[in-house]
Image 1 (cartoon, rainbow, N blue to C red):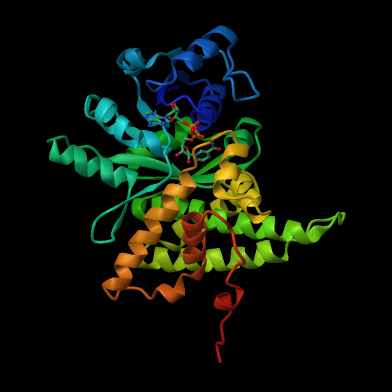
Image 2: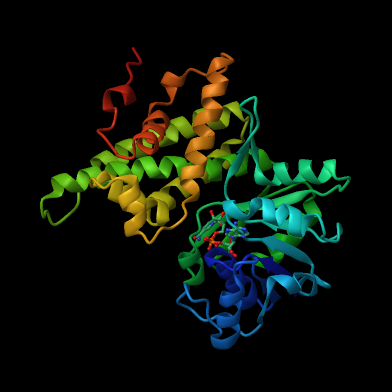
Length: 348
Ligand SMILES: NC(=O)c1ccc[n+]([C@@H]2O[C@H](COP(=O)([O-])OP(=O)(O)OC[C@H]3O[C@@H](n4cnc5c(N)ncnc54)[C@H](O)[C@@H]3O)[C@@H](O)[C@H]2O)c1
């Protein structure tokens, strides 16, 4: 059995803690600097305030200031911060961590270089660490798997990416369960790009469903035509981006699977539905209790990256009408009609 330290004590870190602890691994969860109250609550009640199910007994909790104790003797560390904690994780954890401890990242998102190149969080961290003289390969986990589904043993299939086969297999053995199926790949950039950009496109799919709700008028079954048609367009544009990144087909399809689950039930879906139903971005965010949405960051970065690539003659922006539409929603603050004609084609 392995000792696994998880940094970040949100919903996803908790789900991974549950799956790994149920297998008998020793799990040590440490919060970020803003998680002290959550750590106290977990210690007191054995539950995360935002997660329904109690943690198994072999999960221990640490305040951020004690993270180094939490990592003593660990077989590997999981980074489970969200996009807003990426630089904190780099500067306060990765820069100080014993280089022999392997790291698996669960965060979903992308960084963008000035020249329009998109890079995954693992690549971003590796290059910053290399500049500081630290050689480290970072592994990452991606694929369809909401925290709630994982905790409730809903079968899913995710992928771990990285360089070293022995480390990939060690992580897979520690985490896979009868309901949590894991594939392995060396295609880190492809996989991480796929599962990050799906957040941008899931927003478009959810907006389409929200707009369709306006037509439902009390019908027993909501209408799904427009959601499905926008899903098609989202998949098409994702595949175009992923082709530019030379992603393997499996990595791209993992992203499409993830697009489905994110469009069906996550914070991004709730936000998109409200926009589609006619709320402004500000109103929707307020109604959702001021939640932070990683998808908005990805929309902006992906959209800017494609604009830069278009200037360089590498892409044609008219091939990305859904991305342009979602970006315009963020710019204007409201979801106007979708550009349906721009989604059509004539393959004659
Ligand atoms: N929740 C899910 O179902 C799910 C599923 C798949 C992937 N993910 C991905 O996993 C990652 C974590 O998701 P989550 O739902 O647990 O996120 P979350 O919002 O619950 O936060 C996770 C952790 O990030 C930390 N954090 C947030 N802002 C920070 C900052 N500025 N500085 C330092 N730390 C900060 C929080 O304190 C917390 O410990 C995300 O990138 C998400 O996309 C989540």
